[in-house]
Image 1 (cartoon, helix red, strand yellow):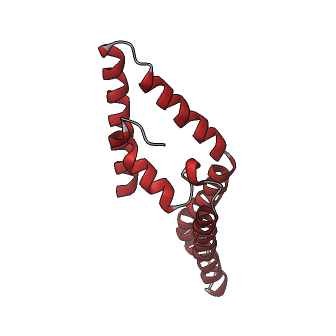
Image 2 (spheres, rainbow, N blue to C red):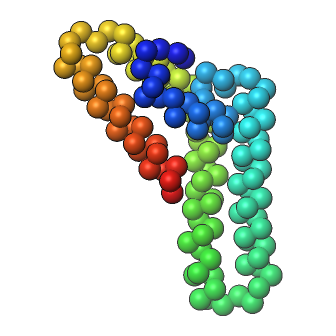
Length: 130
């Protein structure tokens, strides 16, 4: 998906491509390899944390200290799998964005879309920072 507003979505395309989630590459073997490595890494990281908890002396304080680390990891795995499932919807959304950009009628519409695209880019950078 290459269109004139690529400057706004280049970062999202890069990040999603790294994880194999860019919808325009979803049918390629390369995307599935990246997805597999990402899922395996997330599962490995979570499993090692759970094993560490199980091999240590279990106290209520220790478990309460570890749960805030493990629960987000489980959520990340679930979110990643969900993103793979809804990848076609993301493609539909990006197609609609492309159509909106191509059919913008007034300067006001273009400014609104530029503002929203800039906010999306800032949000992506903010999440990457975390």
